[in-house]
Structures are given as C-alpha cells and as structure tokens.
Length: 346
Image 1 (cartoon, one colour):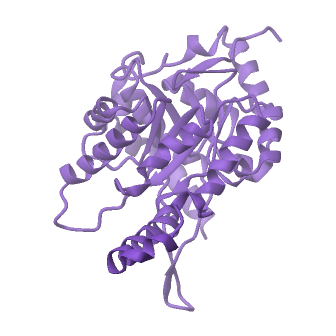
Image 2 (cartoon, helix red, strand yellow; image 1 turned 180 degrees about the vertical axis):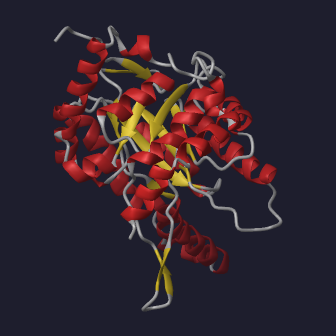
C-alpha cells in the first residue's frame, strides 16, 4: 500500500494520526495507556477529575477549617495545611504525572464540572503535573424554569474564561448539542478562551428501576448512529471556525466513521466505547482501513481530506438543513421499507 500521511494537528499538538482515546477506564491505567499507544492511539484523554470529588473531599475540609478557626482562635494550630491531606484529587494528579512518564503520546487531562467552584485551581495543578492539554467537560442539565438559555450560556462562558486564565496549555471544551444557536455559542466559547471544541458530550440518561421504583444511572455505550449529530454540526461549524480545533466523539466505531468525521472537518476523533468493547488492538485495524480507503480515493494526507465535505464545500448544503427533511421522509415511506421495519419487530 502506498504511504499516506495520517498526521494531524489538534489543540496545537502534532498527532501521528487522528485517533484519540477518549476519557474512559482504559485511560485511567498506565498499563492500558501503554497498550493504547502501541496499538496506534495518537493521544489520550485521561478520565475526568469530577467537581463532586473536589467538593466532597476537599471543600468540606475548608469549611471545617474555617468554622473551627473562627470559633476558637487557638484551634488554628490543630489544623495542618490542606496540602498535607491526601484528598482524592491528589491521586488524579499523580496519575497525570505517571502517564506522562509512561508514554510518549500527548496526555490530555480532563475536568468535569458545571460551576466556578473552588476546584478551578485544579486546572493549573493538572498543567503542573505535566498534561499537554486540558479538556473541560461541562456537564450541566438546567432544571430551574427561571434560568434562561442566556443564563445557561453565560455559566458556560464564565467557566471557560476562568479555566483559561488559570492555565497556559491548550484548552478543549466538550459540550452537548442542546443550544438554540450552536454556531453563535461556539464562537462565544472560542472568544472566552477555548482552543478547540469536542462535539458532543453524551449526557447520562437515567432509567427507572420498576422493582425498586427508583431512578438509577444506567450507562449505555454509544452506537454508530449517534455519530450523525456531530457529523452534521462539524460540517456546519468547520468553515466558520477555520482556525479552531474540532474533535468528533460519540458513535465513532469503525473506519468509515473516522473517515466521515474527517471529511466534514474534524481534526481528530475520540473513541471510548469501541475500545471498551474490543480492546486497544482495534485501533491498529482502524488505522489500516483508513489508510487503504485514502489510497483508493487518491488522498495523500489527512490534511488534504479534512473538511472537504464541510457545509461550505459540499455539493448540496441543504442536505445538512431542514430542506432535505421532506426527501428523507419520502424515501423512508417506501412500502417495502415500512413493511420490513414492522416485520423485524413482530
């Protein structure tokens, strides 16, 4: 097979190919990180340090310290500095350092939260631990009817701005798709300090346990059809955010999925579910198949193909918009398709 250049750039980092191991249990272990690197992963996002971890394990100590010191001045001598406590986040920072020493690929730290709480300074700690970049995974589900869409967006922007001010390494922001004008909001995130966007976050959808009559978490791995949403929006955003890194995530399982994401304009693709299902070795096969496809279509590099089917470059931009909706409905209502669909569920 002729040699093709699979390299790409994401968040200012030079990657040997577009495959990034997304935050998952596999990246939380040094041994599996090494296996991912050997199989072809170009970078890895470590499991997130959650806001709740810091809130419960460190901020409670702050409150105890402040309460006691205010009540009894002499109690100050009984409390060592917080750095002496082995709180949960310390283990995370050690993993960042160990990961950087164990592999040569870029290591991307991850913070998962929704507020500007006392955990913001951990962004700087992650940088000091050696992370090459930071992914801010904003997970916020508004439930207050008094909170407007503008309020929600302001909360995101303030958080991104606060994190940006605390670090000098590249910052990627992982968001969900539920914004009234995603192109406008994406531009605001970039203006607030994001160097790149990760599209899209998969929010945990709780289920109901009918035996216990309780709402409980139920994690379901992604399926391939979920890629269609990020494909659409990356195609729309690519030309408007020309200098901004964009990563596709959710539903990237096979070589065809990687190729589609690159064609609409993704700089990199992030995968977790497929790695959890098949193990790190699946990455080697994906890279081979992507390379074969590129040769068959006479592409010489990933850079050449990136964005070649973005909204501004595709023959029919309406395929990404509502005007194509009627065509889809008409094609679906073919009697044989409907008959086959119902037959599968009988």
